[in-house]
Image 1 (cartoon, rainbow, N blue to C red):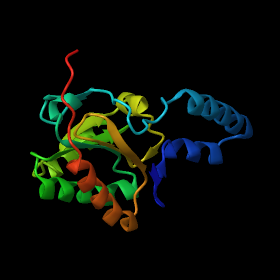
Image 2 (cartoon, rainbow, N blue to C red):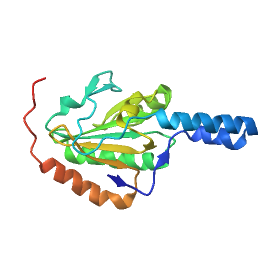
Image 3 (tube, rainbow, N blue to C red):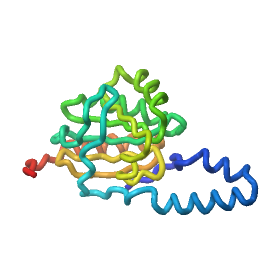
Image 4 (cartoon, helix red, strand yellow):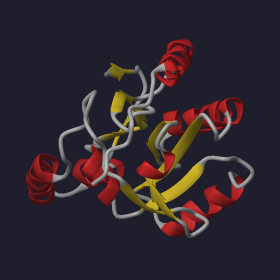
Length: 195
């Protein structure tokens, strides 16, 4: 797993409350934050894991399943509009999607813990891309993926297994990321198993 130099820890508004509240409020918020931090997410995926299949509905209203993209490299990326590094990463993912084409690769871009109104705005702005856009307003999908900071990217190989996880973003990581995606795309896809 690569840990890039820029990433955003979730819950930015809560931090503001802790810093400006009364002493009793600060104490209560710290206790609640500690409790929430210990129970909020599953363990992040590791290389070789089988990821969650059903991801919800796209901005076009279609059900999105990772298994629908079997044989392709799938990049699942969690982001939010308030996250500066995420907003730098988003056009890069759009460029990767455009360069690779949907026959080889699919980017699934998941707007994490933002209201649907904000999601609809960004989905409209990104409507000319081939990325699949999903809203995870409640954070349920992210929780299952072990998201604690964003951007959070899970690269799934052609065999349907997790190939790597990247947390954070920096422009310095781009050449290595592109090389890694190309290397993962060259790996053979195993025959799908009947369930």
